[in-house]
Amino acid sequence: MAPVGSKARGVWCERVGDYPSMVETFLLPLGPRLVEACGIGPGMRVLDVATGTGNASIPAAERGAEVTASDLTPELFEAGRRRAESAGVELDWVEADAENLPFEDESFDVVMSCIGAMFAPRHEAVADELVRVCRRGGTIGLLSWTPEGMLGALFRTMGTFAAPPPPGAQPPPLWGSEEHLRSLMGERVEWRMLEREVLEITAFAHPREYGEHFKERYGPTIATRANADKNGLADDFDAALDRFSDEWNRGTNEAARFEKEYLLAVGNRT
Ligand SMILES: C[S@@+](CC[C@H](N)C(=O)[O-])C[C@H]1O[C@@H](n2cnc3c(N)ncnc32)[C@H](O)[C@@H]1O
Image (cartoon, rainbow, N blue to C red):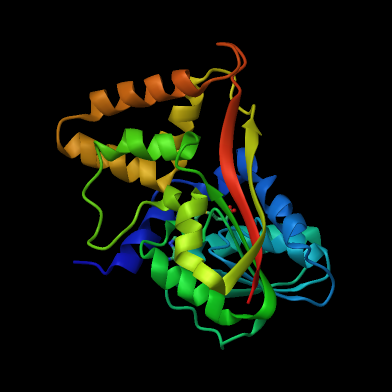
């Protein structure tokens, strides 16, 4: 059996979907939002954990920070490097598991993750690592989908069709719960911002194109549909995803609009 980390990595690489194109289609506003909330400026040593294609790393580097962009899935760095080049910035791209970061204690002024570290299965191990590599008084910034929001609901919809998670794995959207975050970090982080905001998505004309987009490109949805198919439930899965897309549409049938809630949490390491 593959170790947990390598299984998680498989879900995000280009063999399973096309995550970089999802970023370009509707996720781009999140990176700059996190960078702004963290107050990143020139000369700061910044670590972006689970950077993907550099959604938060690139705007941080554009502000003059020295950025290390790390991720479990280095296949995504190729698209990230292209984006960085066209933005005219240089970053350090480092393959790294959020549960076991290959960096010295207290080596960054800012440690951040944009809808990234939340996907590593062992939350306590990740929290310990984020704290460990941030200097005392430095900033920890996390942008995470909430359990009550649209991504939380998608994971619940997919849950009935998914293969059982590996032992010890916790659900990603829990990182978007203020209570869970406080219990993970305890007194080690003094939060200066804990706010819920929404990402508005208008990239899809018809609501069900949202579900189709995920079926074609989003690793976790592709893996779940394959499991449903194995169990003879592919049609049921498709119908559930259609219902989900219709239910969450806040626009019309010709011009869909979705509001995807996230928690923006920024604090100082004590
Ligand atoms: C939804 S993407 C977010 C990427 C990027 N931060 C963004 O805003 O577009 C989730 C990322 O988490 C990464 N990831 C999943 N498990 C991880 C782990 N254990 N350690 C580091 N990265 C991980 C995936 O490779 C993927 O790039």
